[in-house]
Amino acid sequence: MVEFKQRFTLGAVDKILLDAAHDAEAIYRLLHHQHIEPFIDLNKRSQKNMETSGDIVISPEGIPICPNGNKMKPNGFEKSKGRRKWRCSPSCGCSNAKYGRTYHTHAHGNLRLFTNTVCGSDTWKNIYKSRTSIERSNKREKIDYKLESGRHRSTMMWYMRLYGIMTCQHLDAWYLDQKEHWDLDKNLFYPAVS
Image (cartoon, rainbow, N blue to C red):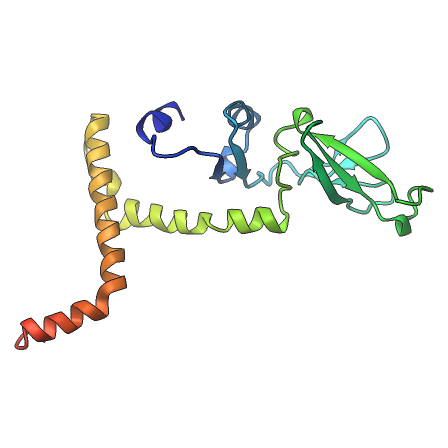
């Protein structure tokens, strides 16, 4: 992360998308310290509900479950207190309150489960969806352009190879975008070839 920040200074990073291999408390703490909001797919190995001091349990996705077994719905985030409010509908029957049962989760209690954007929510899914394009780009670099075939020992040579591959990726995208124009020009200038 330090090397990334030193090399890429064109803008501020405020969100980061990582896969389940990065689902570790230390990574969440590091990103929280650097004021970066993590979007990390939760590791499926931890499938147990987490107990709380009351009768509410927390699902593996970080969603409180009321005593009747219903998942509570998010009901806002209080930035000043750093906590998310959850609500169970009055029709659930787990509370006599007219508004329904409420519960607060604090990010400092568990940075992994209680992120600013609720894991699995529509907003979270829309942001995390862009990760598929990253995976396609990684596949193109590693497999199609044989990134790991280089037998370089220095970091500088790896970066040179990577920058060359990324330039080729941009040229491919540019060509696909301009393909119709290139085909017309080819017919004009090289009629025998086409």
